[in-house]
Length: 252
Image 1 (cartoon, rainbow, N blue to C red):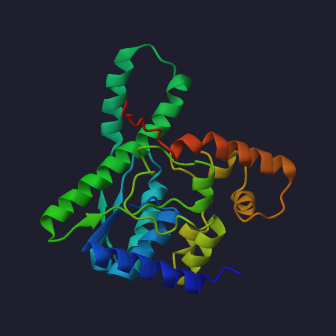
Image 2 (tube, one colour):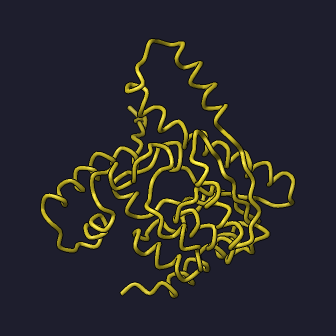
Image 3 (tube, one colour):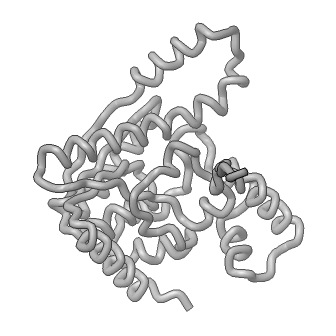
């Protein structure tokens, strides 16, 4: 039985221990307006103090509602919120890339979707370095991916897969919600239908499977064979995202 209170306390201890051992000061993370970043922000605030946590909204042809929900999280946990609008950066990049050939919007779709989290990753690391240089201590970037997303590879290599500490890495979506309830994440954010804020469709519609079913596979629980097979295929297709082949020279 998952005990959200105990798990929350363990995560707080994990964060504090890592920061103490490595003499770190603060955290910078993107706040999307969704539950995962909200829960991570709340955990980081409890572990480090809200004065040492900085959130950043990174709109890029995004919905205005996302920024409003992000502010609810900031107001709840009391951390500083910054904003870097990446729309013009994205557009400038696209304009340069389109000089390379005559590409259709469908051909560009996957590239466009994955460019946004890669720009966001660069932005939070830029801010982390900037704050480290100006606030008297090292700031790092927490990851906000949960176990269900990770299991099926629902993240962008070189984007939201890049982080320095991963507080909810082993929690399923349901478990993230339970921890969010314990720490008081605003209900509008915590129970919002998960989406990437980019493609315009829900995560589950995009994946073609339910997060609850992914959790069943992770936990070795019974599941409809057809759904289990879909999840197995997603998991196997994502294997390359976790392992980078490295050639090692050999002595003759």
